[in-house]
Every structure is written in structure tokens, then in C-alpha cells.
Length: 497
Image (cartoon, rainbow, N blue to C red; front, top):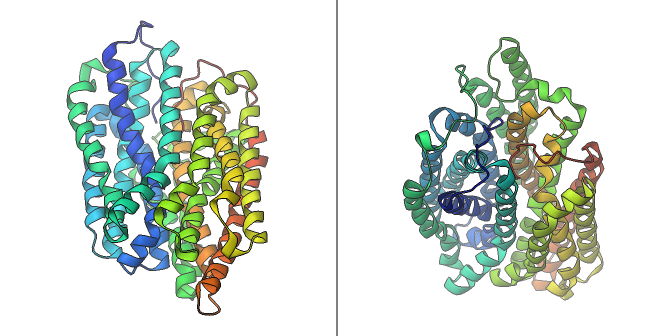
């Protein structure tokens, strides 16, 4: 989220720098864990709070959208006032919001707390990459980012199984609350460690002189309003029967996004500091890479939203059973992420092509299993091979993808480009859940009483939703070829977020 950092004068990394990295990655672990751990809790939340189908989509999409919209301004604020205290503030708010999520008494309270939680995550995550760039010399920075990439892969992959274990241990009525409260001890310990271990002030040099033009708050308001206007009808439309206001709101969202683009061009022409530098999109390959980030995360984030609801609400399995289904994906992701940096250096862009291809194969395979298997006979063994393949591909892609997308622009533009990509990843997650949720619940019709009718209805809807996820992955596979074949080793960019 920052510009190219000043290079430290020594290649020796102090012990305190590695300790600070642990503190930073504790926050990153929490933020990314919460993108997936909640999936297995959705059926429990639905029952406990009598939540609507749209609420389930908002719990995931609201978090992702707020997270994404906070990334760039938070990075700018960190550049101006210091990344240590921005990290501390965001982490503290995230911890408090996690407590509020668990205390929610109705769906509105939960959605609001969840949006605040996502906003807080978007505040402190840019500080993680910024501080790593400033603390570590180039020779050690790659290792630090590789560790960060592994933490991203592990936290995202372990979310469903951790959530399933918690709900199994404490029961559905209270277990979903503890899914949020698992952040509390981690957050408190990380906050204490931040005060004592994270460098700040003169100990952490600025990357570049801070622009006096400040943050483009009007641009942020325009794009926020536009994205919310697009998401609201996508999530609420099928639940409301697609009344006229949903189409009008979609049109307003498109107009607001167009107005945002025009405003950013205007700010740039006045030598201001636009939220999204328009000149980045003068590189066609970067534009393709940005769309790739959006589409891939739309496919990736929606997988376990679909499977968790099918497994519990449709097939009558427990949250733990739903979490167990995700284990092959988690194992594949961890293995893929652990090898992605080495393979990227050896194979270049091919590692991304292989990664997205494996994800596409895995999702198409899952779709075929759901389509051809009798609903009552569907077990986790049917999904084990395709989920492992998809997880392995996701591990190959997640860690190095930002480096390849940023390589499409000039090295001096790396900071701004990585910020845009981080936002598009989160927006992709929000849009993916909104679309998948609309398809899933919009096609859900139970035609008769009994478990068989319920299973058949949910399996049909899950099959339709998985087909859309596979479609997103296929589009992402075509977009990968827009990226450069190689990335310079000394390019200072952030890891995937």
C-alpha cells in the first residue's frame, strides 16, 4: 500500500525485526481467518437469529467490501502519521468489533458489527506490508513476504475447520458467537506486543516524502457509494422479488462508478493525489490484471459459502462435518503456498497459469459431482480430490499473484498499483458472494416435505452456484495470460492480501 521504500543500508536483519514480523502476521492471520471461518457458522447464525438469506450474504460481502475500501486511505494515513499506531488502532477496533459480532442479538446488529470489523481489517493490513518493506533489506524481504504468503494461505484455508471445531465443541446456539470471539485473545496479545515490539517514529523511516494533497476523500465516497449501490440489489434483489428499485439502484451504482472514474481523472489533471491513479490503466496488461484479481477472488471466496450452506442446511450435517470437507482444500493450499515462491522464480507466469487451471479443474469437477450424484449419497469423499486440486492451485496463485500484476507497470508505480490490486481482491470477494448468494437462494425451491426433498433442492441450488464459481475461474484463467512472463527480483511490491 506504500510507495517504493527506502532501502536499508545493511542486509543484516535484527532479532527485533523478526519479532515485529510475528506481531504483524498475528493481525494478518486474524483478518484473513475471518474471511473463511464464518462460512461454517452461517447456518447456525441463520437459525439462532432467524436471519434472512440476504443477511448471510451481507455477513461475508459486507466484511470484504469494507475491508477493501479502507485499504488505500489507511495506507496513506500510515505514510503520514506512522504505520505503528495505524496498525494498533485498526487492530484494536477489529478486536472490539469481533466482540460486538459475538454479542449481536439480531441480524442488523451482526451486519453492522461485521462491516466495522472489515473496515478495521482494512485499516491495519496495509501497515503490515508497509512495515515489512521498511524493516527488511531487499535480500531478506523476499523471505519475509514468503512467510507472510504462507500465513495468508494457512489462515484462509484453516478457517472452515477451526469454525467447525468451535461450533461442534460449544453447540450451534453459542458456538457461532465463539467463532468471532476466537479473535479476542489473539487481538489482546497482539496489541500488547505492538506497543513493545513494533518499531515506530524515527526507528521506522518513511518510504517517501508524504504528499501534502492528502487523501482523496470525495473519490472514496463516490466509489464507496457506487459499490454499495451495486451490491445492495445483488444481495437483496432475489429476497425482495426484484422490484423496480433494485434495477434503479444498479443503474445508480454504474453511474457513480463512472463518476468516480471521471473524478479521479480530474484530480490527476490538477496534480492532486487521486485514490486510484488513472495513469495506471494506461497499461492494458495492468487493467487485465486488475480484472483478474477481481474475478479470481469472486470464484475463490464463494466456494465454501456454497458448500457450507449445502452441507448443513441442505444435507443435515454438522458444522464440524462442513469444516472437515474443507480439509483437502486447506492441505492443498498450504502445500501450494509453500512452493509458490520457488516455482515462481523458476517457472515465471506459468505457476499462475497452472494455479488458476487447477482451481478451474477443481471447481468444474465439484460441479459435475453435484450434478451427477444423488443428493442423499453425496459425501465428503466425493469432494476430496477436486478440493485438493483446487486448494493446490489456489496456493500456487495467492502468494505471487500481486507481484506479477504489479510487474505490468513501472517500478515507480508499484506502491499505488499494489494498493489498487488489494482493493480489487476484496471487492471481488464481495461481488462474488453477492452473485453466488443471489444464484443460490434465487434457485432454491423445496418441492415437498422430508429430508430428500430438502437435500435435492439445496443440491440443485449449490450446483447452479458452483457453475457460476467455475465460470469466474475460467475467465480468470484466460486473464492470466495478460501478465508478464517474469518478475524482476528486486521489485518492491506487497504480497497478496
